[in-house]
Length: 463
Image: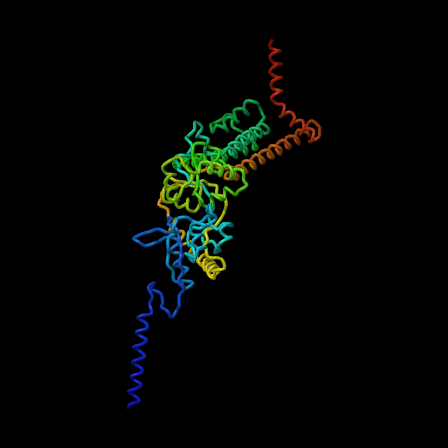
C-alpha cells in the first residue's frame, strides 16, 4: 500500500513539473525557450520602399519577409534595427566605413538584410551571400519630358526606315518583272504597272499567264501590307505613347534639357567613377562638377525630383521598376548597364555566410523569391499599354518572301511561254530554237526603242 501511494505521488509530481516547464519555456519572440538555445542575430536594414517600411509602428517589406523566411529555415531569432546614418555603406574621408557596412565592421550588427549591392570594395571588408535579387543601373525619367512631338510625317511611323526601303525595292523589282514579261506593247505595260501600284482598275487586263501570276502576287502583297499598316497605325494612335528621345546613357549625356544624377556615395556613383568607358566618364564628370545640385540623399527624394522637375535619376533598375509601377507617369529607359545583385552582408569569416547563401538558393529554387518579388512589385498601372514600336522588316519577312517567289514564278512562266513560241517559230523560218529565243529576248528588251523608231519613220513618210 505504501509503495503504491509513493508511486502515485512521484507520477503526479513529475506531471506538474513538466507542465510548469512547458508554460515558462516560451521566449519573448514566440520561439521555443532555452531548451532550443536559439541564437539571436542583430539585423541592420535601411528604410526604403518596398524593402523595409514602417507601417503601424512595425516594419514590413520585402527584406522583412525574406528575413522571416530565413529565420524559419535556419532556426534563429533576430532583432531588427534601422541603420543610424541612413546610408548603405561607403568609405568616408577619414577612411572609415559608413552605413550598414560600418555597423557590421563595428560589430553593432551581425548581418545586413537590405537592398545592398555586392561590390568589390565592400567584399574586401565584409562577406556577402548569394544575391537574392538581380539588378543593374538604369535611367528613371518622366514620360512627358522625353516624348517626341507628333511630326508632319507621322503617317510614316508604322513602318521602320528599313521596311520602307524594302517596299521601294519591291515596287521597283515588280515593275522590272512586269516590263520583262508583259512587253507586248508600251502603253498596256505603263497602264498595267500604274494600276497595280495604286490599287485601281487597269485596261487592258493581262492575258498572258506569266503576267497574271505576277499581278496576283502583287495584289496579295499589297493587300496584306495595307492590313499591316492600318493595324500598326491604329495601335500607334491608341497607345498614346511616342518614341522616347532618351533610350541610352549616350542619349542622356548628349542632351542639355534634362539634368541627371544619382545617390550620393552609392555604389552607382562609384561605378561611373571607376569606369573606363568614355560615356560613363562623361556622366561621372557631369555629376561630380554639380554634385551639390544633382546628387540626392535618399531614393524617395530622387523619385520626387523626377516627378516634379526636368531631372533623370540614375540608379538601381529594380528600384526604378518599382517607381514606374507605383507612378504611371514615370518610365525606365530601355538600356541597363552594370549587372549586379543584392546580397546579405555578414562579418568576414562568419559562420552565417554559407548558411544564409544555401537558404537563399533554396528559396529561389522553391519559387519563394519570385513570390516575394511579385507581392511587393505589384503595379498600380494596370490599364497602361505597352510601349509601341514600328514594324521591322523581320515582321514582314514572309510577305516579302511570298512576293519574291511570285515574281520568280512569273519570270519562269514568261520564259516557258517565250521558249514555246520560239519552238513553233523555228519550224516555220527554219532556224534553231535558241536563235529564235535570243532574237525574241532582244526584241522585247528593245521594244520601246523600236516603237520610237517606227513612230519617227511614220512621221517622215507622212511628211
